[in-house]
Image (cartoon, rainbow, N blue to C red; front, side, top):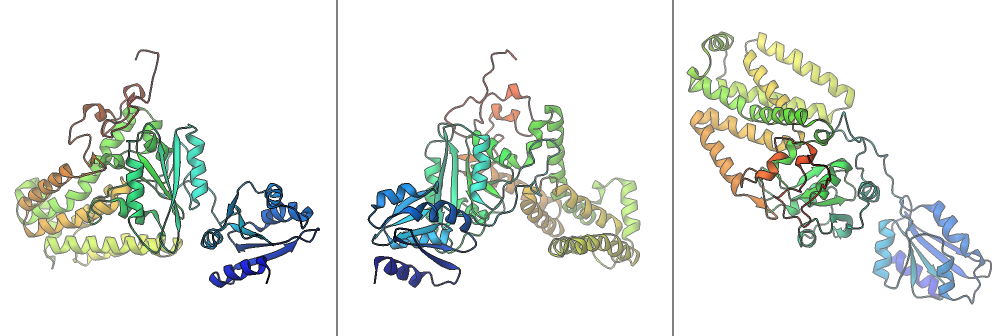
Length: 478
């Protein structure tokens, strides 16, 4: 058996799947070759144009160095070990075996299916770039490189997942990123042995010091402009192959109250919107709990005329205020889940039926009161002003509602103090979650819930121990 046949048999012994194809061909001089690739994720047209055609003129006695020079593919590497060839074929590249040679060539012809670059659904901006990350990591890396053309930009690719071998890119700017942070993140990722990495949320869980916490520990970005802005501030960005959501660490809670559009509009407008988001989130979490507490324990907290309205609408209801609020909130969550999972047009009809028909019928039947529906609906709208925190704030709303119905206002106050105390003491990768408020860092307050003008943000966040502190130098005195 020839060396070429032995190599083909060794690869096919491991890669038995029918979509792993072997293309055998010979040059005009009689030299035999075999290209092995996975159908669907390897570009067969480039294989023919850049590999097969140039090798037509190879003679039997030509050395391997001449064959290497004839390969027109821009990505060509040499390999010797069979396990490496298996990994490359599984990854989408082609492996070229040459008759009479023990080694092989790795051809970078990977071309997996990918959707076009479009605006992400959760980070829509009226002003600013419309591009969003997609599921192809190389495209995402190109979108980052398009915006940061510095020679200091470093992108290190690692593999994670025993069976998936998912590519993960660690992105940072050398000299700006805190020293040792990229290596620490790489170590955290490598320490977790898992079969499959289908999404970046798995990597986010690996990087969280307390993965069971209600509060998230990693920032997220679906737009390259936001991602690059965070990286330029000293954070480390993580791109995961197969996921359109990028990760940034370290993370501060104040990040989620900021949007990319804040930096493309006036500072007054951005500050107003951030204040609205903060108030909205607090109302979304506390409003149902305070309503229940006031009804059950402290009715004097409600203005007298409003209390009369609530009393008249609640008269004759078969349920207690806390059970009523739980029921309305549960119906809202069910409708929300159903509208997401159902087909697009059916989901829209379901939302209209649930909100109008079901709610109106329940009020007229005397099962629930109008104030309960208004409060829960307003609370849900408020929480979605900060979509990146919806998972956390929705959970907190349920917890506060349970405490308010069981203990009353005192329980709400105690739980609030406990959560604040917890957040004050928590930090990841040396950055407190409540920075720049706890500890108080005055310089960073200009880009927190307040958005100052560009000339007031000449230095990078002091909350992050960056290398290069200055990000704006201006000869004009401002």
